[in-house]
Length: 367
Image 1 (tube, helix red, strand yellow):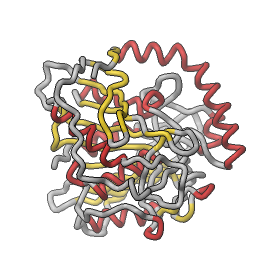
Image 2 (cartoon, rainbow, N blue to C red):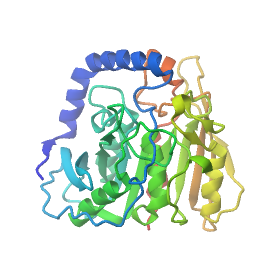
Image 3 (cartoon, rainbow, N blue to C red):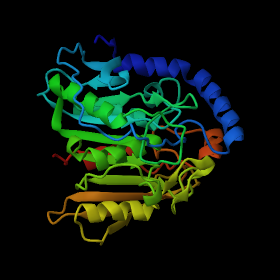
Image 4 (cartoon, rainbow, N blue to C red):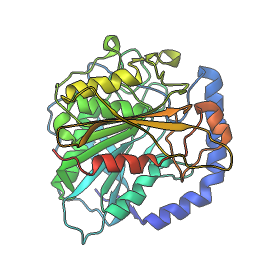
């Protein structure tokens, strides 16, 4: 396994040079498919579960002889039941004590690891590279498999959508974690999953089916599957979970129900949080707060309301961020989507930086 090596500076320069061209091509493609299926495009298609999609106990030996350089390693490969999978892996400074915390970042359906790191388009998820460099954390941006529509995505718990790949993504993601742990890079007790949309749904599947793999998960524009549309097994173990959803999301119904174009049924934002509050044995009494706004001229676009649920030691174990008037995109101060893109996915909040909020949630969690 010898992935191409690129420095973080090189990637930022490359992304800036191709930004305008790819952004316009992306938006044109997005709008075209939007007309065909009402609400689709980058990061908004959902996946289904299948009989082969549940996590298995199959051991996939990724080996320990990994040629990983400091900085961002492109096209890193790791084994899965269906063949090799790819990821971009950020490796912190070799002088830092190993093993390091590991954050697994999972894109939405129709997107990719390239898009997640901001190669050619605006991506709030790319802020994980800044965090990795500053905090000396290993980051893995993983590519999903190709589904029936030709889009990369993930086989999550929702059974009523047939567009996602029929891959065992739980086993594949376990394999990635095992590979990076065995290499000495990652701390098995400090592995965190985060994802947007379909990437968030597969992160929740990991929490349900493979809780022993992760220390915490945090998702954007994702929710628990409806009980009648859930093909996942449930290990019934506690896992710290954070949700961040817009209440005007045109793709994921904030109040629960059927997603557009028969992409599955989900629980509401409040029901999703309540599930994990009960699972973690917490009191159903939240500490509620409104996040201070970051003013953009005279226009106040959204408002973020946070509810947190702590254990007896005061550690926040479950959190819910409601983006009032927010859409399907990731809130970000640094990475702003254009108005045309927002006309499809809804308003983006600029009152917080999603990756920073999630790292703050992760950093104190350990198995």
